[in-house]
Image (cartoon, rainbow, N blue to C red; front, side, top):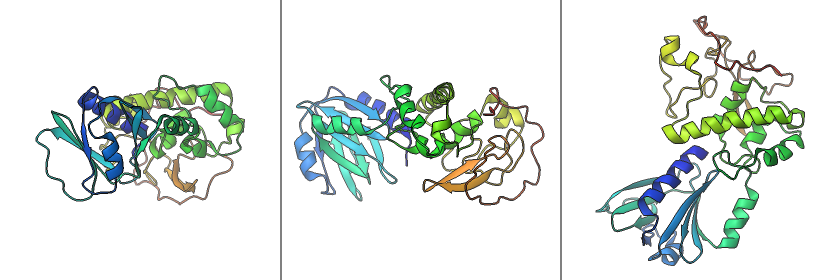
Length: 298
């Protein structure tokens, strides 16, 4: 599922292509016919991203709400538009560009009260100027849930997904099972600031990179990571491989219905989840000098 930085990139892209223009909207698949009819011929006023939710705002106080889910994806380009192929949920066209949407979890027209209800149920989005980390902290400090689960809870932190949750906890040196109620306000602010910086970089680069310059492939003279998600990371989807900081095999275990990855040495924990025992690396890392901001011990 796309994380928040991808949705913010899409909002910016769609604003560039369609904001201020009257658009034609249809649904070749037929599953969005009524909604397309409501938006067809209206001017798109603006776009907005909130966590993993995308909103296109139209004249007449109507908004197109889209959640891509696991399988949704967009395509766009200059006119002429290609003929509809496959299960095309929605197609939008201006006088210059076309946009296609396939396979989303949600594609629906919202009224202002429905948009307000969506915002009300979502947590704080690190990529929004109106975000308030203290409001998120109020939920964190009152919970006995693990930090990993709280970061993935969209009612706490909107837009943070599996990769960012795993990586930001490693960078902070925090055990993923740390109960939220034990986290200080200062600790949460540092975690938030790092997550915000990583996600902003994700918006700018279009990929998730979380390693410090000390641990890039060039600096460590190692092969680049090969993964369909791309990006250089510390622990995500690296079970059994050597930690880039200490050389300990990265561990994996389930939590909140998701895969949790962590380094047992860099992120010491007293209550570890059930671990999938990894194989020891053939060549332990010996040249790591430590990150620019070393993992912290709390």
